[in-house]
Amino acid sequence: MKEIKINNLLKTNYLVTRDMADKLKKYYSPESTFDFSEINFISAAFADEFQRKFLTSRVINLKQNVKKMLVTVSKRQN
Amino acid sequence: MFENELKKEIDFLLDKATLLEVKEIENDLATVFNKVTTENEISSQIKEAVFYILSELSDNVKQHSKASKSWILYNKDKGNIIILLADNGIGIPAVFDRYFPDLDKNDLEKVREALEKGVSTKGEGRGYGLRTVRGIVEATAAEMVFISGGVGYKITKNKKDPLEIDVAGTITLIKIPVDARLDSSQFYKIIEGRNERN
Image 1 (cartoon, each protein chain N blue to C red):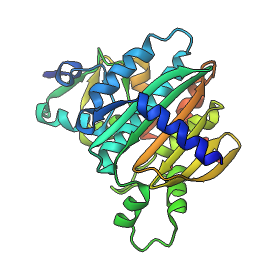
Image 2 (cartoon, chains in turn yellow, cyan; image 1 turned 180 degrees about the horizontal axis):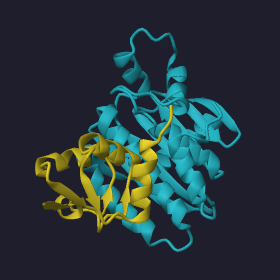
Image 3 (cartoon, each protein chain N blue to C red; image 1 turned 90 degrees about the horizontal axis):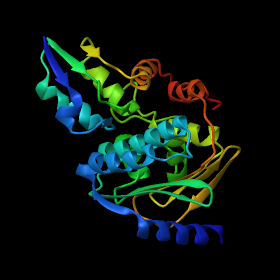
Image 4 (tube, rainbow over the protein chains, first blue to last red; image 1 turned 90 degrees about the vertical axis):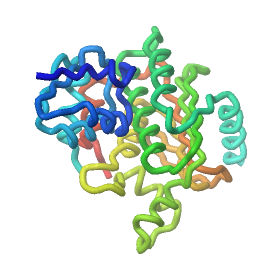
């Protein structure tokens, strides 16, 4: 199992744009697990793009607000 | 008259704002977020809302504006949190013209559609950013001025006044009362789109 510690790769604790999710692609493999342990905030834009790109991936160490944003974005309504 | 005063205020704030390269907007946002995090008089949910607003507006700049430069300001003044984000891009009406050339709406109606319904140029399940920012503004008794391609609105909880101001690109100016409250469930309802009345 390969753990991707996101803050080390993106050099920040705040994940704000779709481009940031896009940048994670080059580190990803189907065995990857994304470690959010140092992440303080994710935007809806990042959350949406992350879930589009890494739909079935494992995520670990989510802070409550990060988890909530991922869940909320998946429930958005038109 | 009101629009002249607003133009002066925007010019004043733009002078104080940080100019940044759009491609590096994430780095500058992190600096602002660190500053917001240390604020003692702002509730944690309002901080999260400020992060949300700046993130969505910045992502729009990167995704749609074709801007090379952006200006960002986070400040507190006269009991309000001041957020300004501006860019030198093409503006929402031009984005509509490019992606929806057959749409029979004037520029103000195009901006209104982006603010109220959410518009996506990249497929299903996108384009909620501005709609959600407007929802947060209304829920926190804040005030928002949004101008894109020279037209836009001043938005408060119960009012939406059209504006026509000769400024380039897109400018968002938001004033949130420092003592505003927003509970967590309400915040996530807004993001989900469950607060909508339009």
